[in-house]
Image 1 (cartoon, rainbow, N blue to C red):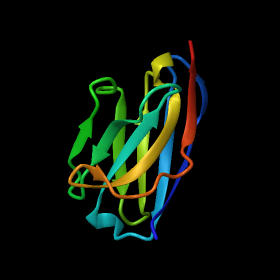
Image 2 (cartoon, rainbow, N blue to C red):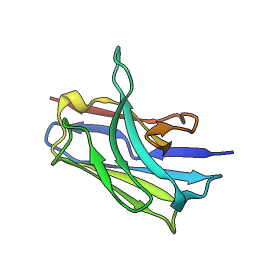
Image 3 (spheres, rainbow, N blue to C red):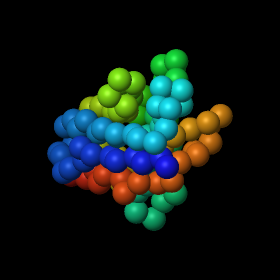
Length: 117
């Protein structure tokens, strides 16, 4: 059974940085693409960034140049470094396992990111 545990969220001022981490178990981690998603109040969950098994990265236009996704297959973690945070980045952030761009894992609890302006 896949288990994903997100951490690293918090309250930060606009312009600040946070680093999120997701620890995965129950999957062949290195063989799977991973994604970070977010859901703001009253909005649908959206893909923020993804990284394939061969380290190809993709980002939503809204975060390009500010966020960086990385993975450590030995540690079974996927991180999201978030710089130059904006109030509109406020959301609950989730990680997920992807296959052909589709989420194939259950959602974890996520981690709250709040950016004050």
